[in-house]
Length: 343
Image (tube, rainbow, N blue to C red; front, side, top):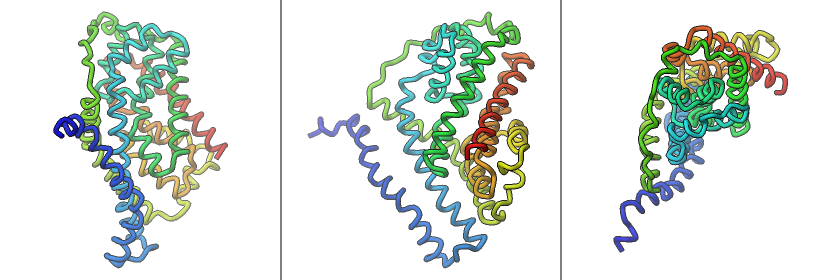
């Protein structure tokens, strides 16, 4: 009997056993919220404070549940796409195919602003062209599982798919343009003289170890972003309950021609991750902001992160950083205007 219930087997089966519980709780979140707010607390729907509290009580656990599920499975997938493997896969890729591959790998490769310089150095040493490197650096923070889960949870799969596809377009387009401009002269000279080494031999992981990595990913990522989720949903809940309908239509509606460039200019100096900005964007749309303008604002906040620019200044001259901001900004602007026209 023991061999059928070994520890590795238990680790594999435990998440599968929890899936029905997760599903039952998720599909009953709305009636449970109604029961808590309306029946137990005797609050009346339609009142400002009731709508604010209802929004937070419903959205916060929903988002955390989605994050937990998706991050667990993405964590398993990421054990097959380490930074070292990514570096080797992109080495020597100089065509538009290199930009496409870099953007795709950026989605599944672990990345944060603090790892921008080590990854940049490793890519340069491996012979990855500058434009291809930027395609990766744009896609990795912008199109991550947190952003996709939050967008899916608040807007549905169509908006999530739009965000992923347009984010990939921007990463590929911007990296390709930067590659054509031949801006290697604006990279610090010491970068090309640095040897970061080939990296340690990668350990072959068993499936139970990959499951464990999924658990660790949930603890690490959810542990870091839950407060941002709470703050973002809290701000969104207050706006949901108290900001009048169509309030944002004049400022960020599709009829305001300046709304897309203005949203990008506002978003660039701001810093937030997807966990903090998506709940706010959902309420902007609810209050009259157009989809294209809202996506442009979100992409500029996440994709043109101020801390990442400060960190990259250690390896790049200011003209290259400004070119990067300009090219990505134009790509985001195209996306914003396009979706304001189509939707």
